Amino acid sequence: MKWSKVEEKIFVAIMICSTVVVLSSLALILGTVIWRGLPALNLAMLIQTPKGGYYLGKEGGILNAILGSLFLAGGATALALAISLPIALYLHFYAERSWHGEVVRLALDVLWGIPSIVYGAFAFTLMLWLGLRASLLGGIIALSLLELPIMTRGMDEAINMVHPLLKEASYSLGATRLETALKIVVRQSIPGLLTAVLLAFGRGIGDAASVLFTAGFTDHLPTSLFEPAASLPLAIFFQLSTPFPAVQDRAYASALVLTGIVLTLSLISRRLAGRLTEHVIR
Amino acid sequence: MAPSTPTEFIEKWLAIPKRLSRQTLDRLAKKWMGFQTVAVGMLVPLIALALLLRAQPILTVRPLGELLFGTTWHPIKQAFGFYPFIMGTLWVTITSMIIAVPPSLMVAIYLAEYAPQRVRALIKPLIDLLAGIPSVVYGVWGVLTVVPLIRNYVAPTIDRWLSFVPLFQSDNPTGYSVLAGGVVLAVMVFPIIIAVAEEVIHAVPRDLREASLAMGATRWQTMKYVTLRKAVAGVIAAIGLGFSRAFGETMAVMMVVGNVPKVPSSILDSAYPLTALIANNYGEMMSVPLYDAALLGAALFLMVVVLIFNIASRLTLVRLVQHS
Image 1 (spheres, rainbow over the protein chains, first blue to last red):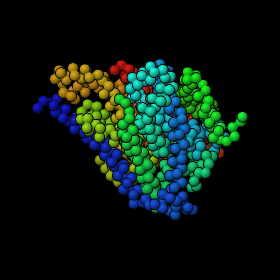
Image 2 (cartoon, each protein chain N blue to C red):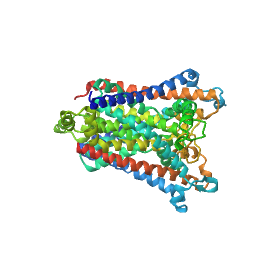
Image 3 (cartoon, chains in turn cyan, purple):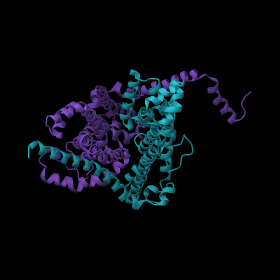
Image 4 (tube, each protein chain N blue to C red):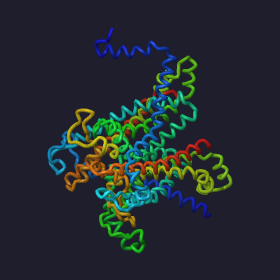
């Protein structure tokens, strides 16, 4: 056999091995979290807030963190949505094929790469200027900054998939750009837009570094926007930092809950995308 | 007549668009959307400016060289040397790149060139899933799997066979090490490097490859001599994006590297990355003068490095896409 054929075989083998390594790292992470988290998980943990001495191994649960995270990520996603959709539409309808549209896309890509701890530090600075303490609102601001580029770029791409002729048809009937955007293009790209929203939500709910100083941490459920709020990632981190094995087990269970939420979201977004595309014209 | 109930109030406002002409609405929408777009476009300089303002107090009283290369970190005594932390970040990031880049590129080549459509459709969502796992879960995995593995197997083995290499000499018995951080970060950046590199390789024009294949070259030879030559800038950009992600990662890294403020000299030593420094000290910084300025200075440094890598990579990618 010629050397070039042997070389080809060797490298294909290396490629397949690499793929197996990458995929097995995913399996290993999920397997570890399930294997250590599942035995420690129970219903009482999910529906109680921490009682006195929870971090020493006494009674209680992580409801404060679960709800806190849902509030934080939900609020941030709503805020990011209100900013993202107009930007994505602007890029397509008012800044089509112009250099400043490309500059904004580049800026969004760069924002995507900014570490979440920097968003945390920036949001904390904003809060100092606004006179806010660590609170649900502060956490929502920090997370919405983090989610903004993810959501906008996702929507940008979803809108890009809409067939250009649809737009032309709408214009030729006399519709304005705004009408075309809202009544034709947004409806047509709903599956993609939803995927972008869920992706951003998943990123927001899993992020710890940005809510560390902005949302604070508390054992209570937040009752207003100006109270501190707990979050799942931080609950995992704090429970794991204690020296008590019983509390560390709860950290694994909490990690399982967080992973479960994130994976469910990504499955839902896939399903939704599949189901909603029935009415999309290609 | 003033509206009396909330519903009437809302209805009154909702009625306004109907009274405006459609063209006016279109123009108003353009203005409003454009305003938001410009505001978000200005966010990068705005963040940098805010951090710079907050870091100002320490930047005016300490020379930059002393901050970046000073080796003592003792905020109570007003000593703010970032050198051990910068080195900690660099050690962990470079280790992760050495681990992550070869397999990522191989997977990218496999997906772009070799994998049948069915296999691609199966593998890509799984890699996307890896990108969606929260960083704290990566940290938990590191603590549960990677750290014990290094403590019980990797470190003793290296100690027995490779201890004459300075890079592997260490007396840190805990397993919380640069290597642990590197492994966890490597898995975290797999999806980024794979996705971008695959796209870049895929974007190389088909005719180039077909010309090479027609000359009798094997697929790997074509990849090596034609496709990768053409895609090299984009592949470097993919690595740059992975690097900047690893550089700024906080939670997962700080859970597994040990956080000992000393310049590491071996991959089995503990390290204390910049991100962990910021995250660990944020609560107590307010009472010590210059402390918060120092930490926000660290955040600014982090952001500047990440920005340089990101902008360079993105510009390269934009140019590549325009050419093909």
